[in-house]
Image (cartoon, rainbow over all chains, first blue to last red; front, top):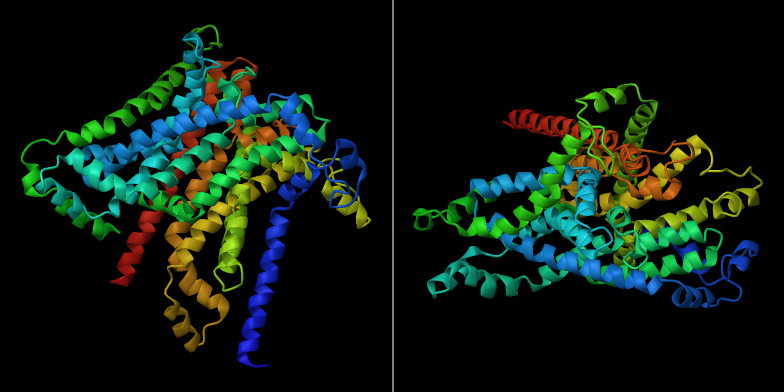
Length: 278
Length: 310
């Protein structure tokens, strides 16, 4: 066997091994998506992997007979507002961390690391009592402001590492041309970071959209519930109606996938960038 | 990394800008700081006061000193949750690290469709927790789950993962590993791709086998990152509420209740705010001790390594 054939064989050997692992890892998700195309009776009786007569009847039920789209709208409102405020605050702080190495920024950086360690439940108990006294339970505001802060450390670190990669000479040149420091930030740095902004935005959105614990504590009425809380309620109420549950869960996953495809190439930044720089 | 930071600091703090106090960074950090004060530091302080009282959601209660904390010492539910949190975190960290490492090494090899596989393996990490739990509950469901169908197809006894205590603990840890390994894989893969290939070629010439090149080239390169990953994953596992709560609700009979789920149940179900916040504080203290120990060990190892190199 020549060296080249052996190399090609090992390439395809690795390919099939990885393919098998990918399928095995995603088996719960694949099964769920396939089951969403069967009626509950078929799920209980059919023993085949592929649905025999796939239909969208569960999706019809979920979309017309449940509050799914209300939950969806709530999720969008909460996730988008939380993301927007977080991006605004974190990009400014990230710029400060990147360009001003003073006691303030060092201390702030350490503070971010500390609050990253906080068990979130520790903040949620007093906030629940506070918001209850202020009549803010079941309002979007309560969850939006907590989401904003929950994403701050990660978003700030990501912005900082993006700003670090932009040479300071560019801003200094703009300042010589008569820009103020803030104008230099606005007109020189920000346009260079458009892609970074998109990435951080989508990441923060994904986290907010997926979040369960905070939404579960603060949004208890069906009018304000987000998708994860709503689906958990389905799970308790229609525990036996597997078909509809699977359809609702599969639907809930679709926005996540779409967003994810846009940012997957930035994944590496989040994974280690922030963590190692600390 | 340290060197570039120092250099940058020099360029930024040039004498021109040092003349007067620069207020801009204070303004830039202000909005974030205010938000953190309100949402993190205020509850942190009031939460501590709550843990010293025997209050409920409606009433502030009386000052009881440290008795909420003292009561935890003899509380068997707390003992179990503490133990389960440790097992859960250890299982989660090592399981996801080993699987993540194996897959990172695999994906670092040349093969067709590698980019697609990398993305496909991230799915468990990015989907909403409730979705992953629903899909898993169906897999390991008592009678009709795919797992038991496969077992009965092989002529084996079915397993009831969610209804017996030990097996439920096992199931929660498996699902935690499933949800966390992609993060490990991604981080390790990023670091693997920065290793210089000539090192491996040189070691092959010197007669090193595969294990030896992993042991002496790959792992040392990943060591600092690995420690960071262990710390992060430990914090995230100890603080994880969604995996145990959504999968088993903490049951059967509290077997899969970690400290966070316990704090949640005491506060929001039993309306015992004092004990709930006390549990949350104990969790925070344990995490801080752990992080300090690991970080100290890391820095002392780095120092001794530096000495060895000199």
